[in-house]
Image (cartoon, rainbow, N blue to C red; front, side):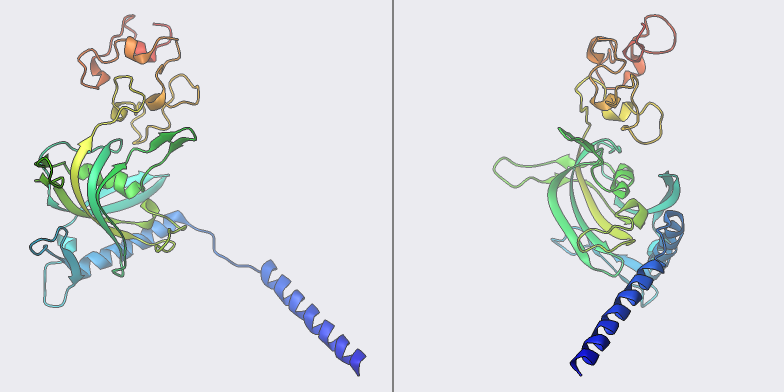
Amino acid sequence: MKLKFNAIFYIFILGLVLVSCKKDDDDDTIPHDPEAQALLDDDLLVDYLQTHYYIPPAAGESFGVIDTILNGEESLFLQVETENLTYDEIDYKLYYLVLEQGENISATRYDSVFVNYRGFTLDSLKFDENKNIWLNIGGSVSSQGVSSGVIQGWKYGFPHFKSGTNVSVPGEPISFENTGKGVLFIPSGLAYSNFGSNAIGPNESLIFFIDLNMVVKTDYDNDGILNEYEDLNNDGEIIDDDTDGDLSPDFIDTDDDGDGILTRDENADPNGDGNPVDALDSDGDNIPDYLDSDS
């Protein structure tokens, strides 16, 4: 009887193994399709914008709230603006609501910004909030190399706003007036894609209330040329611009053309505004000296 029981037991285990193997062999997990997901995200965002409206903040509150339309309120879809963009060869639509434009410096994709923000999923889950925080939206540099920094939705979103004016009083908390305020509606492909992050699930589109206090123009390699002007191929990224091919992008390369003379010493920016439009071209070949190894 015992032998019969053991035989049945082992046959049962073998059956489980075979079923398990077949399940693995027949795994029909659908690969991530970023192009299809971008279209799905846009449908979801449009539906959200058409069925929700914005409520301005109460006294002492910064961002306001978004709620479902129940009594004919004006939809967000009639208020937002749209940026059509291409990232990693996929077309996206970024929607943004400008509540206050701001009055000073416009941000670029390569700057550092001092901001307040609050983040939500489309089902109203608040997953993050920060006040008075610096963000290097152009990425950061360390001994390990260059990191991409913040999500692409922020890189594209913040440039639609301007900074405010610092009205801080010594000994009091930092304070700004006339800042750039708004809401970003970001498709998942410009956020955390199919990976997700902590409370954010895969393929989730996100909403960020933002308040842009201050913008600092960055020059990571201190060569006198601002990061925003080191995008030589005008593709919206500076990490892929490497004039001398030394695997060190120009924005972190103190000698962009690799001729042994520092960029700062080749009259790359004679008027000192960080823009090399007036850079010296000593041999008249329409290539400024700081990018011309044989000048």
